[in-house]
Length: 223
Image 1 (tube, rainbow, N blue to C red):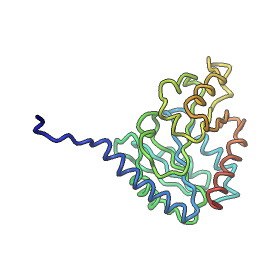
Image 2: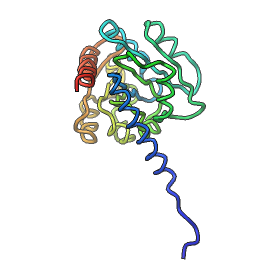
Image 3: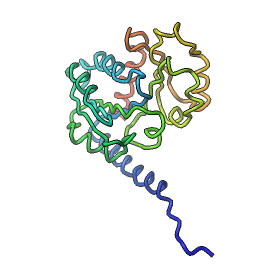
Image 4: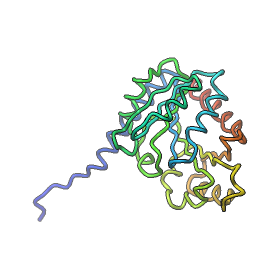
């Protein structure tokens, strides 16, 4: 006979966070502000991709960026140079953001009047995949040097994303990366995911990605 209580803490944490995330999405919907959660491992080119994305869209829509890192403000300075509204979020050692942290970031940024807000999440492929930030869309970057087997090693991350950007395709000739194999593995996990091979450095493929983003903002504001 059991004389103790079992408390499923992890389940409770996720349940509470999911409720907060739904409330945040509803608030952002009222503001016509599309929130994108951008995730990847360190060094994949998130900030460079973000800069090329902003430069393609900043004359058409009002954009805000939240840069999340355990420490430093290097990325926020980079984004600020584009003229875009930006705030740096320090997670205090946390390896991810949840809905409450995202809400605090939006309040600090001042999100009203924005058409598109992009959250650059902390760089790793594990924790960020588990927590709903309240974003309308999840986007991740897989860079060519990381290898085409990442979907096999981190299936949850690829399963919860709406878009996969395969970055650094300009370096394809220097690495043993099979684009077709990577795409097939991702589609097996997530048949509805959109895959865009890009080079944030050269601009190759970026137009297809930003066209998708334009459509996502329009759909969010008109639906």
